[in-house]
Image (cartoon, rainbow, N blue to C red):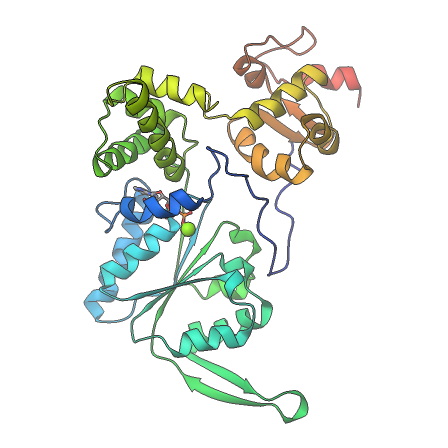
Length: 371
Ligand SMILES: Nc1ncnc2c1ncn2[C@@H]1O[C@H](COP(=O)(O)OP(=O)(O)O)[C@@H](O)[C@H]1O
Ligand SMILES: [Mg+2]
């Protein structure tokens, strides 16, 4: 298929606002209050316990072992990947593997260079500084960070205007672990100062199955193999979602059955929560339905599609579409959004004869709308 994706990441300055809130969706990838409470208990504590991400694990293991053998502080590490894939978990594992304390903060929490100077100057030798959402730091803080990462030094500016003076301050060696969902937004000078960059991928169903089994064990929940597979298959490649679906299915199994999670129980529970066999929820299906039922499968512009669904443009574009595109259900083309033949099939519909199913998909549409 040669659908062009014209709507890539828009370059945005540091201090970018967060992505739109996913409104507490069951299949949303950001952590809600309940997740935060439970996640601490479910986090793998060392690299051996961390499931999947084989390449990242192998590479990180070498970086950390080598640093330990040299008796040195580990190189700065950048973790990039979608929400819920294990970035915070890995940062804690890095500290644990190095036997070092960890300090946790985030880009949006550091708006002034002074905030960063205060944190940096209070670090202990070898400490891990975890900077979440590092792409959302302010520019002055970012510039201070360059020097801190490279020379373990900061210039603290005292005073204002012509009378301001820079007081150099030496820092103990530390390991910066930066996490970002948008590696493309990091200025190259910052990216270049990381000794090691790990790109976290979405997880395979078999890996998520292991995540579900592991979490079920820790939460003291009974689940069989088919039940775990059913939850894994609906978790959108994301451990955080797998853990959350597991908790909802557990509730259902306790109330409606004897507590054991089987395939039937998992499917019935997730039907109640409107998460379908492929992990699409109500919003995802509403987007596909509007696209197909109101606009014959597209192409239709994002604004029109959003009005039809009754959601903000940003919600459709940033909350629903990435997963639909990733699953090959929706395509973004220069002329608008198109439902792929797989989307028709997923909704149990047959594309009209003008849209040959299987083949190039957009061919029929091109003739209909003429280009
Ligand atoms: N590889 C993994 N193995 C087991 N559990 C994982 C793994 N990655 C993430 N998790 C679980 O998923 C949840 C979200 O992980 P987290 O590190 O907070 O993601 P991120 O910081 O990337 O948003 C945590 O509860 C964690 O226990
Ligand atoms: Mg995190």
